[in-house]
Image (cartoon, rainbow, N blue to C red; front, side, top):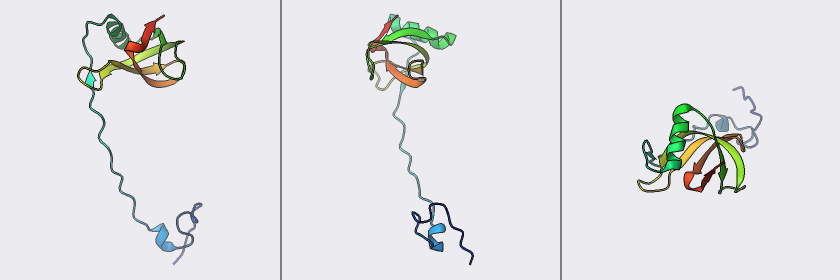
Length: 112
């Protein structure tokens, strides 16, 4: 029997051919938390965010949360939702300050 060594063979059980034929681990996936999309609202700030989602535009804001509270950023929201039926509204989208996708609570947002 020919044994081919994997670069991490010491971690996988050394030179044992049985270690190379180990069964794949079964991955159990946890269900995602249910979300409640926000499609209409009476909150003027949430309305502004919904308009930005529809028009694919970014919003200049100051965010009073996270690791740098009160810092100016541009945020392009892609969706608005709640984690509970009457919970705070969150906006998911691209943050220019971080350069990646973030979720912001809009009750912590102040328009610039």
